[in-house]
Length: 114
Length: 117
View (cartoon, rainbow over the protein chains, first blue to last red):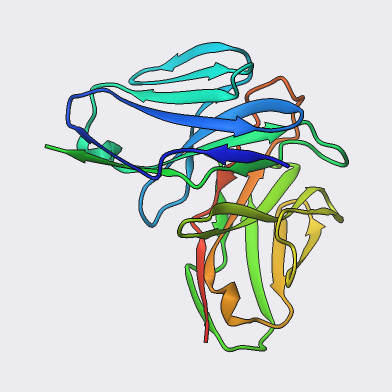
């Protein structure tokens, strides 16, 4: 089975930097995804890591350490529109059938304040 | 743009009714998924399909079944709805890509909020 932990809530100030952590235990790790979900909307893809290190995409970066079972999402120059839930999801090597099955954490609700 | 559509945004049903939730994607994706999302529990996988007529149970399949007769359409069926199936249901699709590629993100539909009375 898989277990994914991330903080329930975080608050940060507009213009600041925030780091959202995710730890996981899984057998057969095959990639970690971050999704953003605004209230009442569908999740949208933010980033993907399968090798150790940092992946940067504009204001958003994601880091992975496979040996530690740890990832973080870094958001820079926070804007009010970044207030959303951030979901960490782990993909495992499939035992049968098709691949690309994800297990999601419960999400971190980020509130950006003035 | 990838588009995943779901038949209803809001649905109200009575206990014991048979409920059909439909999902259609227009990007020729092989994989399709049904999740439910509940406060404090996150997204949980109910069923997924990696090809027409192929399906696999997810983490919480009890009380649900699925149908994939055509590649673009994946249906979730509640044979006899119960109040504990009140939830937000999200459909997603993705390519069936080699494991080490990153272009197989899941694309989500807008969700169906189902209330069972």
